[in-house]
Length: 249
Image (cartoon, rainbow, N blue to C red):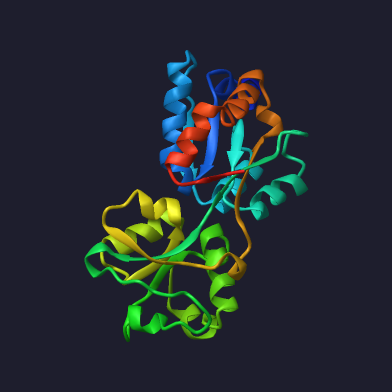
């Protein structure tokens, strides 16, 4: 009985992969990946299972053995982490997209801010307001945000006032609900929300480039997975990426 149970547990990931594709994707790719998955289905394929979250959380789940075919990260760090653990299928890693880092505020408190060293972030936050972004300890948008605030000489003062969210969409939600007077998210996330507006764009030289590496996971490297990865670079997919505000590499 124990042997049978062991074999069932061992085969479960393989069976899951045989039933279709599983895609782990950075939260900021949510809308575009859903659009592209719909195109994939329209082309006659089975709908992939899409799981969205912080790249750090997804990478950790992959390291722990989650059955995944393709991983799309919002930074190089977490793809590098999987590479160090020898989990990426050779020759499949591609930097497909780029993004902007932006400062957002509630739409009913729209302002324009010239983001430069020492700009008056305190005027946006008020005496007690917090700055929403991903957790700088591990979430890519929070890591970029910390880099930018350090570069602009604002980290020591405002770092302690970060409202650290689990992923970029959670940070966006804090601003949408008025629970934070401002937040740092990606330009594409701001674009999907009618409840926030962009107050300013962080200079590109204030943080590492926001890039999205995609790669197949060794244990999920199938013919269908390779076909889907190629599909992400087709003109139809590129039109969706661009339409959602991403920079196509």
